[in-house]
Length: 208
Image 1: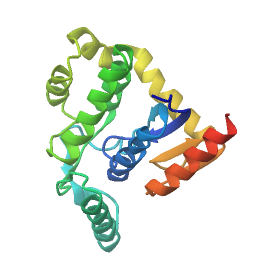
Image 2: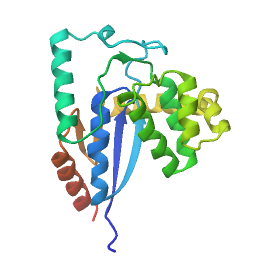
Image 3: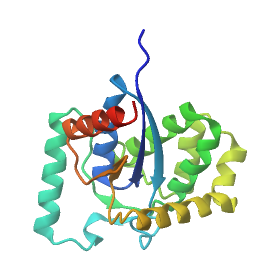
Image 4: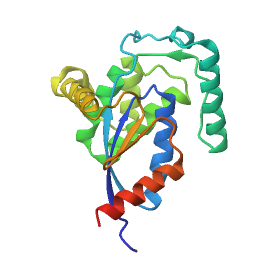
């Protein structure tokens, strides 16, 4: 079997961003053609939201704009067979992001198992991933040991990593999530799979 070309990508993302969820699915489809090495840089987009969550209409979006965004999201999800439940509440994502950072030390497979589960817990199962008890249960289902789980919220190196992500985003003039960096090319927002593939081909050609 031929070895797939390796490409390195940086992604700025948050587990409570619906377009990050869609972008995650589209991006990982490139695994059929490339050995993806992704630097997941997590950014907390709603730090003002309490961990117990708030109704989705607490977000400062005009009603018509929000409805249009959600209609587009639901259309994309249906067209591409991406599981999605109605989004009824917003929560604080900081603890989920810290848990994900901690899981990186458990290896690639464990990280991606948790990564997938955090997205699906919120966007499919409508679980509150701002709740540490919920996060504990998710992490345990992903075979993450208690020491690693506890370290997510006690070890300052994970908090430092989130700060580094924030500073890195500023250096790259990243204003929103999701943002995907393919070499010198930055893709932001709802990115079509075809655009991802074009950017990946361009990057692979440049690194040959």
